[in-house]
Image 1 (cartoon, rainbow, N blue to C red):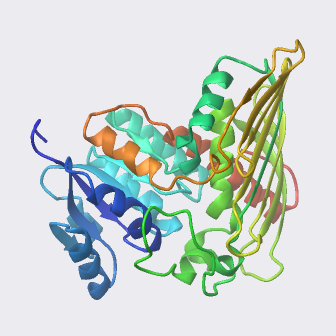
Image 2 (tube, rainbow, N blue to C red):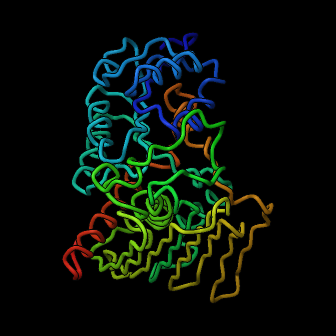
Length: 355
């Protein structure tokens, strides 16, 4: 890339989410060239190529990675392929934005973060809530230890995706930056072999990533319960967590909100000096302190809605060198997967497990 030429980005996995979120954002930017796209299905591949103006299209992701002048790669393939695709891109020295969950195994997540650091490139996880101004304000205040030493974290999320996890027609809408070109593929979410897990990987990777990013904590051990009343992957999750340093936490998730209802996401961080509440569905940021120096941020009613285009804009700014701030770094996604991986092992073994 020169000062006058656009930065070249490739996309691996051009399905429902990528075509509704990432590509509409990138296609509007004069400083980005959509250089190459990869997905299976020749007809669908050509549809994406023509709709968004990609220079090149292929069903072979390794061919995409050989695109001359490529700078960044977005990985939006099925969950169990994230590691293979993201690692191959990092090995080439490209900046990578990898859809959540970062991986389905903790060891793989650690390898990706380590490789990005070794190569000196950015690994971005598309956590849309991180781009809300009040979430960024919460992070700034947590970095200033506004609640003192963290002692307990409560994190809950619920989503209207029951039909998706059951492998049925997805009935909910919203959360995207553009219109839907494709419907979600059922196996990607509902088949344990393809999805790698259920609600925890599909959605709690969002809430857990936010909680770990805000707090900087690391899970040490986990005991968990899950429930799959009508699906092959779990719909409900309940984790109890010990963190390194002595804090404890509870993480819960439910994939069964009624269709088209707003996501619920609530993080509460209790410390030696007070408590912070980050409530996305009620658009609330509040800090209550023992010394009475409280804080409440005035927000619009829709301030907590998911910002699907935020991560893509951030990634584009990184590859074009307009901004090197990564609001959703790979380490946050890694720590979420460390906890979720341990939780799944806990369910299988029926006991507390170490991360």
